[in-house]
Amino acid sequence: MPKNINFDGPFRKEMQDFIDLMKATGYSQSTADAKGGILRRFGSHLKDYYPDANELTREAVSSWCSKDPNEKSSNQNTRVSAVRQFAKYLRNIGTNAWVPPANFCKAGAKYVPHIYTADELQRFLAETDKCTNENMSIAHRDLIMPIFFRILVTCGLRCSEARLLKVDNVDLKNGVLTIINGKNHNNRLVPMPVSLIEKMQAYAKQVHPFMNPEDYFFPGRGGRPVSHGIVYYNFRKFLWNAGISHTGDGPRVHDFRHTFCVYRFKEWSEKGKDLMVLIPILRTYLGHKDFKATAYYLRLTADVFPDIRLRLEKTYPDIIPNAEEATYETD
Image 1 (cartoon, rainbow, N blue to C red):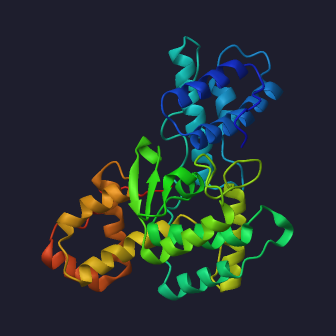
Image 2: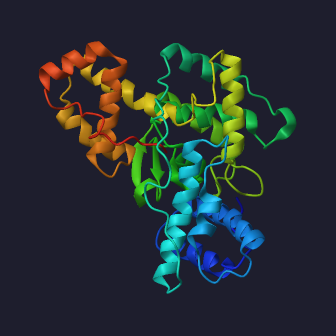
Image 3: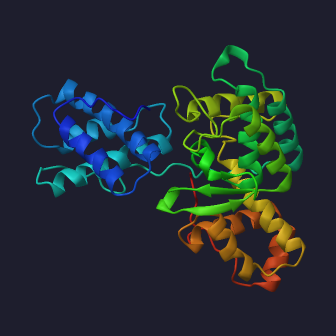
């Protein structure tokens, strides 16, 4: 999504002001662009059906926010969330607006993350190493994809965090990534394994010979970062070639982060590490704002490896949260 969004419809000025306010108050460019893209489509809907509107009515909001027949619940929730925020903004500036309630979307089936096996990870990464510059979708595709997905697998980054890394955020000497303004608007340092550092150094010599600090480490078209669409297209191709079954519900790119966390807990548990000490460290490493999001991975680990559940419940009777206490991280 380009940074300059051409809004349309009766609230086009307010939509632009709302996105500008998001950026000014600390939201990342990618988040603002995503919200802006949704509002641009909402504005086109208003232009077609409510061109003279001077307030945001329940009918106008509901007609666009209602679930399409083949739409996933997660996509509808994303659309409604953006419109809800915009409607609240309109109210704050004195415009009558109907705000869709929190229960506007019917709850869908909860997604169960796919935890990749060690063999699946090995096969998947082997396919990224076979990547070529087929169709030239982006320059250096053959170099970008093996490193990009290894960062997700070995460091547990969110896809957006890896995409938005700049050269200046990658310390190749000390092997540390600096995540700037990640989810929850926090910054953090993420150390890399030695095996990844060596591959990153070789990659940088080829893709960034002049090391401009403001360049995106994984460049896409026109000086922008590699797009989510290109990442997902390649992800699906690598899955297919690796023989990993994919349905409409997954696996997903974000499941690499789930897998990273589950295997950390599995390793610590098997080594008898003190989880009460390590959980706060993992929380900081992942960029979670509270314990609940990190605890979700502990519950997921116990579900995937029943033997670990028995060990944990014996040592830490109350450490595994129930479904209501754990917060599922979707992105």
